[in-house]
Image (cartoon, rainbow, N blue to C red; front, side, top):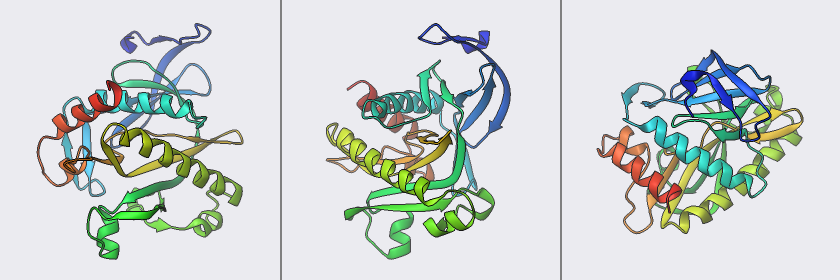
Length: 251
């Protein structure tokens, strides 16, 4: 569906949307308002950043690949009754999403030691966690997304105990579902980031699920198929992203 025409017909045929002005542009995505209240258009970019934006680059076709993977996985999670902001894939780089009141807390689920976990606790990369580790980070680029706990969330007014309980419960369920999904495709879900928001009184999973926000390794070779290839100048970034898309979407 060509969004350059600025007219979107949903699968239901009951809502017609116009793509309107840019609401927000982040490191990897743009968010556009639509003519239908409560709906946004999320556009994935080819831009890539790492180390809190100090490293920048472009990964060809990343927007298309991340949109394909995210759309597929959001639909998959919906089948397991995970509430998400996803409505439908609109084009190669765009999806229609429900507007959320974003909670400025990033949730990181860790199944295998990698990245900052290894540096913080002197754990060898590849160590399997005996129990998944859930971490909270304040979503604030200026502060470099510092780690916080639930009491900070309450004290700062970002979420109440009931909301944080719902976020933790959904995050743990998403982790279990995706670990099994990737395992069946001979992939290891090492760790991944999630963002959540409120839609009325309901907590929804938002943002994206892609090699930008996940660490995913081949089970047999431990080949990295995610943004670590860009972070650490490992080469073959576009090829790794495309391989991951094929193993997820086309398997």
